[in-house]
Every structure is written in C-alpha cells, then in structure tokens.
Image (tube, one colour):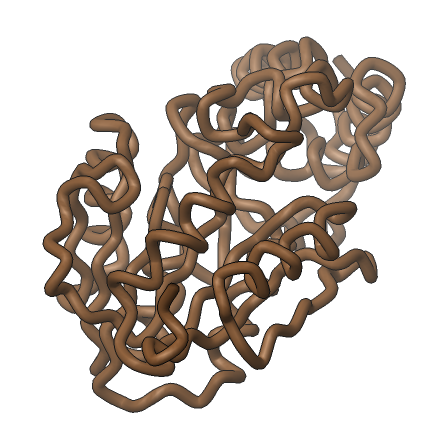
Amino acid sequence: MPTTLKQCLEKAAAEIEVAVGSDSARLDAELLLAEVLNCERTYFYTWPENPLTEDQSKQYNDLLSRRLNGEPIAHILARREFWSLDLEVNNTTLIPRPDTEILVEAVLNLNLPKSSHLLDLGTGTGAIALALATEYPQWSVTAVDVSEDAVALAEVNRERCALNNVAIQQSDWFSSLETDYAFDIIVSNPPYIDAKDPHLREGDVRFEPLTALVADDNGLADIRLITDQSRYYLKPSGWLVVEHGYQQADAVQSIFKEYNYQSIQTQNDYGGNPRVTFGQFNKSQMV
C-alpha cells in the first residue's frame, strides 16, 4: 500500500473504477479513508503527503477489499446521508438514493397546512418520513413498513434525529391502519422494478432485499394498490406522492387518472428523468 494519503487515494480510486465500474470511484476511496482516519475529506487536500501508519493501511485495505467485491459504500460505513440527515443503514432495507430527495422537494412545494398528518408507506430507513418531519416539526408523521427489521432501523434513525413527531409501526401497506385515519398526504417509494430487469444483477441493488425492489405487473402492482387504497385514508383533497421508475411516468399517471386523482403532475430527478408523480384526490369522485 502506498505510504502517503495522495498515493493511497489515487491507487484505490483506480482499483475501484476497474473492479466496480463506479462513477464515483474517487469519492468512494475518500469516504473509506475518512472512516479509517476519523477525519473530514478536506484533510486529504490539506495534507496529501501525510503518511499512513501500518495499522491504518491494514484497516483501509480491509474496507477497500469489500468495496472491490462490489459491496455498497453505505453498507461498509453503515450509514448514508439523506437530506442532510446522517442515517444508519444495513442490508435489510434500500439504501436512500439522492433522487428520492425529489419526492421530499415535491411535498415541500405543495404548501400543505402547518398541522398536516402524513403517512409514509414502506418507510425503510425512515429517510422520507424523517426528512419531512425535520422540515415540518409541527406535522404528525406516521411511517410504516412490513419488515420488522426495517421498522427497528427506522426507529433507530428517528432517535438519531431526535424527532418526536414521527410514529413508526409495522404494517403491510395499510393493513394495520384503521380506515378512519385521515391523512393530508400519503407518500411512498414502493418497489417498482420488474423482476426481469437486468439492472437487478448490477451495482448496489445486488446487496439489497428484492422485496423492496421488485413488483409484479411490470413493476406497477404496488403503485396501483397504493393509488387505489390511499383514497380511503386521505382527507378530502388530500395528496398522494409516489416515486417510480424513469420509464413508468405515463403508466403511473394513467393509474392516477383511473382512480380519479386530479392535478396530476410528474417531477424529474436530478438526471432529468421522470421520477415522482403526485395527484390530489377528491372524495366526491370516489368510485
């Protein structure tokens, strides 16, 4: 292992790019070394010629080997930043993606009442619920997930973020919720990948649970169920906001229209791809 920080990072980044095909190889290398040295990444640019000790080199090699085998950085570090929140992650849930922050932005742009009640379906790490609870501490947020492990992880993150306006519980979508619940807004990043999608054999998703990724009906089954059932849990003129695949916008909009949602819009992600669709339901249109 090269002895200086600069040499170490250059070699590691090159190895990651070749082995994993990561488009953030340098960042990966820096995050792993920052973990070993317990420092900020700016340290590498201030003191690039500083040497690594033998013990630090060994620790770094161990972490680097895991990344070269394809393991996601978030799993190696056991955390991921989302909406400036430092969240704990593990292999029982999806790793929060930057593009999911688009869903948070879409909700913020709806200008909902200050006392709104929000439901997050399939909360996973709790990322969406916790981000919105941070922005709106006066909101009442309910977050559910079918996985006991996910519920436990989301609760850990709720405590990390010190948010008292979030309640987390186990539920298979709406199964544990009473129909007299009345939410101003329901949000979800549900499974939406087709089981035949070749991307399931590539990158970070190989290390994530298929149940959180894959849905029947070309990836649309859970979105359809959520769109249908949300009508019974929304207040009059309440909003539904869902994340979906970049090729599914037209299909999702059609599902929203089928169930009589109005003011339907789709918002692009940071790559310019259609990613989040939302609509408003008028209970007088219930069919």
